[in-house]
Length: 185
Ligand code: AMP
Image (tube, rainbow, N blue to C red; front, side):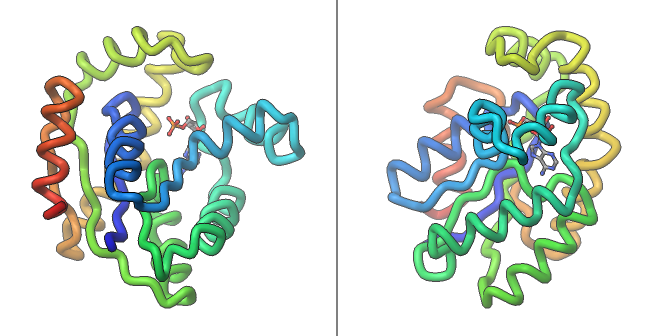
């Protein structure tokens, strides 16, 4: 049973890979972006707030997303069943809140998997994906936000000795097999 965070720039294929691995090994999967998009689709109160940020490629406030993650970890019984978490933490503050949260829930994080993909490739992939927030302007802003706010999270986990880096360039199967190896699956 594994407890792992998938980290990486937008468009790196984290969600795709997280889904494949979670299904293959029957690991509970938490994809924050999907939870937020579902809330937007259902026009819940959370969805209405989140949409304002997502439409601009900005981050939804830390308190809101932290609450969602805590709920999700409890709901999937992450302590007993493990988890793959994609899309969180995305700021240093979120990483610190997450650490406290795991402590409270008595959960140990095994690894943080960083999926490495260069910018040009990311932009190409996101434009091809054509999600509602995948227009060129929003993509550029998401990348800017990523470098400003999320990149420090990588160092944070590197210093803790939890980070494993995986090359995210290649076809889906190639990347999946690199991830399996990196996670000893
Ligand atoms: P994603 O599907 O992971 O690219 O996320 C889509 C959008 O959801 C992002 O551009 C943010 O607006 C929002 N979002 C996802 N994860 C987070 C997070 N950890 N903190 C704040 N906002 C987030």
